[in-house]
Length: 176
Image (cartoon, rainbow, N blue to C red; front, top):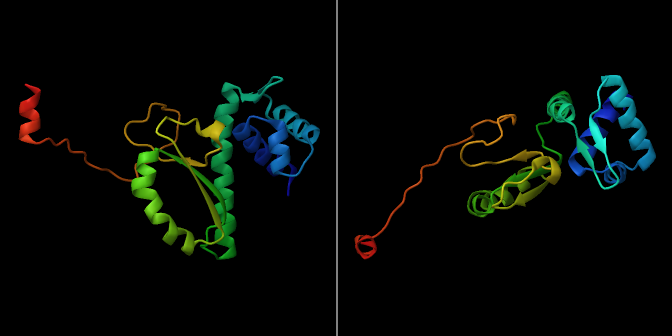
């Protein structure tokens, strides 16, 4: 693997985990190696991408922008690799953040058939009815309902649903 590609993949892992040590463990490297590679990437880019403290590694504003671009590049590269192999089979790991109520009602019932069609794909569902920090949670993709609060996120509408509020006439009378 080329050095720049390794550095970009490491940067994504560090950004998602918030830790050089965790990224090192995931990619079977030493923590000092990861730190050195990220420092070299920052030098190559000409900007500080992460802020290092004794407790955590956080992204700078430039680092957040760089992360979005790098994730898009890596995703395109993986897609190109799959196309070149002539395989439409999905493989690897996918971490999906979503509201728990939506996941239980809409996604979990579809999972057995989806996973049977893609046995080389490992899917982790990160379900919470609280808005998740996709970077901190290490989510690859997030399903959101309603308007996006963060306009810096890349988003696509994948569906629409209608809601209906219903009440019986006797219940409504009891409110007056």
